[in-house]
Length: 326
Ligand code: AMP
Ligand code: TRP
Image (cartoon, rainbow, N blue to C red; front, top):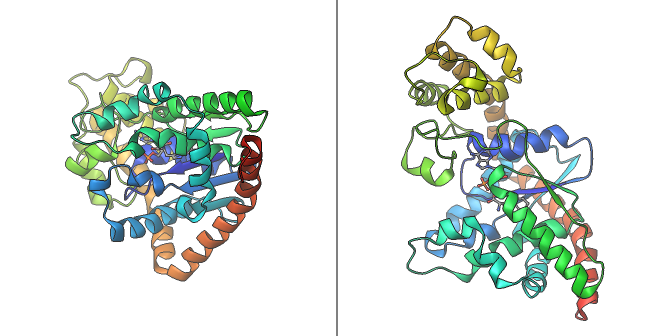
């Protein structure tokens, strides 16, 4: 199992539910590799602040650990520490038709309206394919927005295997049953996203939000003017809150529906606030412990990079040999 998250600052509840929570839930089942993808954070160079990026990489890694990723069970490392990622990305880019990359919806939305678009933004999914293929990955747990990139990875692997002989394992995306797409609290018609969260404080719950902020954001969340509290029939805003309450408390949706019977949206919001704050308190405590122990965190990441290289090195050499280089 392989997955990655960009070091763009504090993670929000969407990334937690779509990615981190799944990683932790599955980490006993197989060999896992989890990566802070800092090279992917360079694709809009105007927005890169080098000093801040380094700090965000550490903070993101600390959030992985705080969420329960266990370095004894899983390899956790920083993408730029393992140069095999960049090297394989070049080999793969030579086997990737340009048209496949222009079709990616994330490229379309991120390049839209920009005066200058870096090549990195276009080849971003090829680097992502390298991340995944280096570890002979079967499963890639991600939120729904990444499924297209995982399918592209599979297509690139198939094409490479056809051109140069059997080299790569074909991976599959794994999307959570509930919460693959948490929506904005201030606008349940759009996905909860980092870029909107920066501009609109009521949009997302961040993993490091204090209890009072969580309460304000949830209490102000958009619902509707009715009273429908059955998940199936509820409006998008209400469904989103029920999903959050379910994920944060670990209780089935049916149990939440039962508890809300006779109540209104105010009751749902209170229950959601409590569940989220209860979930975040221990996570935030662990986060501070990891951030305070700089040497300890660096050691975990150094060991992770070493173990990652042990797996990635042979795969890169296999791909080089298939292409006649190296
Ligand atoms: P990012 O933080 O954008 O690097 O995304 C990290 C992971 O979180 C990816 O697997 C995304 O698919 C997932 N993710 C991001 N936003 C959401 C969301 N609103 N709902 C569910 N999953 C999400
Ligand atoms: N592109 C992913 C995102 O924006 C992050 C990512 C990079 C990733 N490499 C990966 C996710 C490999 C899964 C597997 O969320």
